[in-house]
Length: 575
Image (cartoon, rainbow, N blue to C red; front, side):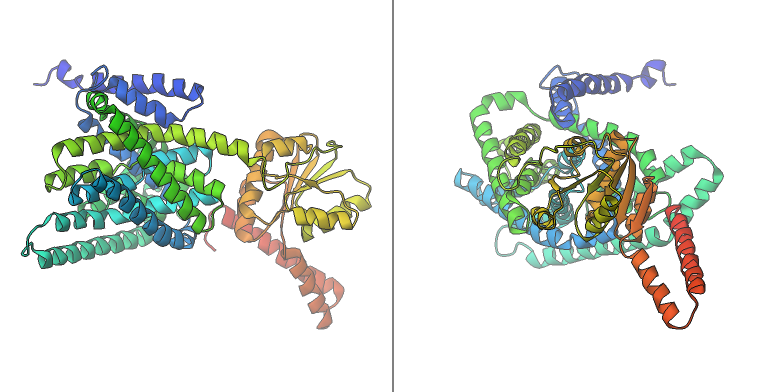
């Protein structure tokens, strides 16, 4: 019969992890550093090379990898399939070039320093991969995951996850020697593995498309909240395990599950149920990486590891920034994206042991490479933070003017955007003698407005400091008239959070953005072409012989029915 001591044996390591997290992370956050760094350092302290409070980091990592799985599930939940399709150029083009060029450069450097061709290939690929957990955590902390450079970084990470099955199939081929190494057998095995993986993905897509919504609807009808949480974990972990069994990564399976549920009515409930598990397990993963750093090995080879870490990070930053620039990013965004992708990835701890088992990488080289990968994950967040600070200071100077100091920031109305829509709105307001402040970040629009006698200030409405200096805190109404949907919603969120007394009047692009604006409780929203189309339709009806009164009633009926559909769509009702 099990004793109380047996039942409690798991508590000391759990308490150790929790204590390390609640002590280490707040300290590093107070120092202005990323939470990732706090977890990594905490792992070093409690691991075998530190206080030896945890002696088997491998056991912790096997559990903590679920944190990466849940992170990718939540990312999938928040990503629309249309956005994924729009990223196909970055996923296939940028992702392929990043992995290929970085692996070639890092592997070539290893070969020049004395590694065998096989070892250089494995280590080059392992270091070329990026840390999905670190990169996404940094982007989330900056709230930059939806930014252009954040989306490109995510596309690269997604391609790397997709490429793992091919890389693992490729390693046995390069391990074979001699003329009868069985190349044909390898090709057959590789094709069989690829076919199995494709079949599994198709099966998951079909089940997710036609089975998950009815499944969750049935569970929701039971009224048992804990069953919904269990079902969410079942879907995520089950899909992850299936993908791992067919040769893909668990993270890839979880991302696919999230993507399939992104359009579900239960999306927000699932995200809320998964989030607590994701945060704790992801922190445990970072601590397990810190525990894997052998400080004795690092001390014995500190100069070589320091130079190798510096060289690997600089090479990846230079290549990735150049590729981002080639694919349309600015140099500023390219450097930011490169900084978050510079650390070696979680799969380095998978590929390097496989390389050792196949005889491609010898013991000492493998241990040093694992230490190098872990150190890049430790140093990477620091470098990203420093680089981001430097770029933020430099970004204020060169190409665009600073936002202007507004002479009278106490106007009753703040108008953001002075395009065709904002121009007409401004005429209406000024015709009543109202005090209006107008800002726009398009220099040509400002110059054009000046020619017609309008005073428009330069300023980016997505920046809180600009809104504050523009008088948003004293304005009765903030009119958002820009044509960038993401920036529009960002401004709405800023105004609601920082200036709750101001009413938000929003020009939206289409029905999708109109529903999102309604979900944010804006005071008034109008689609840019809706009312003009109704006026056009009314005039057409009158031209066809209807009386003005009858035409007006028809238009009013269309307007009311459209509003009713919007309300139903906002509530998630199918139409």
